[in-house]
Length: 353
Figure (cartoon, rainbow, N blue to C red):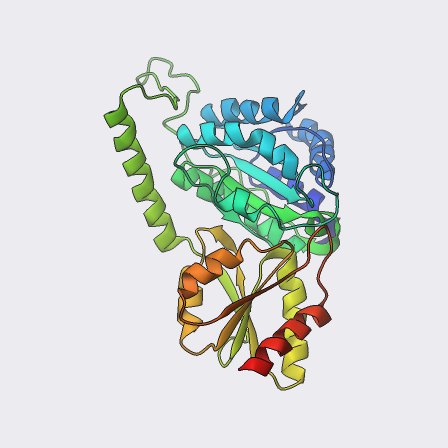
């Protein structure tokens, strides 16, 4: 069994990226994700990698674009307002069909808000990461170990589909410490990237990375092709975890840090004889509609729990499609809900069934 070490989420995530072959990091400090950049600043020179603190978030994401175009495994990290500044560059990455890993350790907002944990960037991550017709893959860990495990998956998925991937973390997961097993470095089987602009040595035609298309029919055809790929991803890459859903009459849907709280609330509810279960989305895009669909027939009600005023609840309601009630419970402004508060929300629903 691999040795387990106690690590903070942000630092474990960074070490996992190095193990996955990331050798280029461009970022800018902002709490609560600064430890990612600080860790990379120490480690990258030791693995012959590149660490560069850009002059701004805008500069950092454009450096990511350049490294991705050259075929490198490259990562950036930021927190809520910093991701907003990177949104134009993320759109350019998507429009150029380039893989890159983007970390968002969410803080409370809007504006500068506060540095406490939040999940209020769900809409941004899944709906409006930047301008134009595009999607990015969005993964949501709920433990430090899962943060580590999803990093390699994120790089692999990005390379497979040639698109940006975001890991949506938060101030709680980024700052907490848990024992983790770090992956072995695997740099032997990184995928070939024949499309990369990394020098042709007169062995192949020039590669061009571009997101500008002057002719509307050409751009429309490219977008149709890209959306066909998105449909393939929806059909093959949905991920979710279920907990005690087999006989559940009330199903909580929660991701990330909120799912940790909700799992405890499920245990409390079961101890009181309430048939409650949990669905934890791991992919936020594509959203795991199939998992919710599987449970609609038996469930009498759904409860969405978030650290926001209610954002993922829209996707739960779309998946349920009016067949069952979908309620919402959330805390916001940087306040983490407690298991007791979630249990109270469950009891209110149970009282009306």
